[in-house]
Length: 183
Image 1: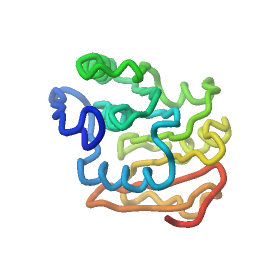
Image 2: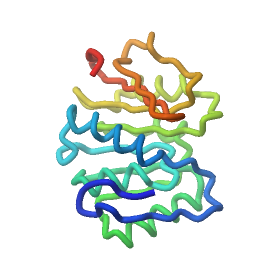
Image 3: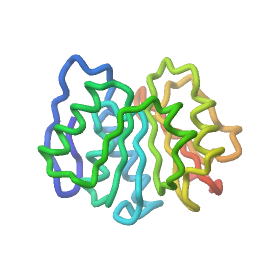
Image 4: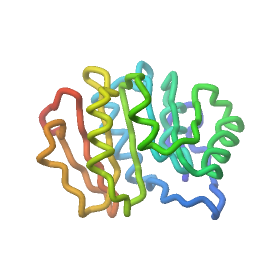
């Protein structure tokens, strides 16, 4: 994986094989950030990266000027890798927490301009994840929640849904605290 844009542009990041992750592809990540850059100012938001895995999305956000990103993952090896990589890349804006996302969200009260979640594709609780974000009002007004998921998941009837994009095998569904029209 590589960082596409910003102060760490073109930096390659090689994750160890023992991490239980499926990093977002560079093509999908580049497409995602093209969409996001037209909707939010990354340099003025606080972001939350759930099921952070390798930290791929977090590094991209910080590299593009995001002032603070919180990465959450349950796996100790993932947390260690993200911390080590953030240190090597000189990214003090990136905080990493070891936590089960489903326990973290109900107890967390901060609000974010961007929340990104990439749970394992075999996750059985996509609906709960989306509900926890909106029930706990974790998005700021105008904030965006992006969920990466398997092709079999459909949130088009959710009241906060506003768009869906597919890039190869990667699917992103976009939600907002105040739903918008498709981008």
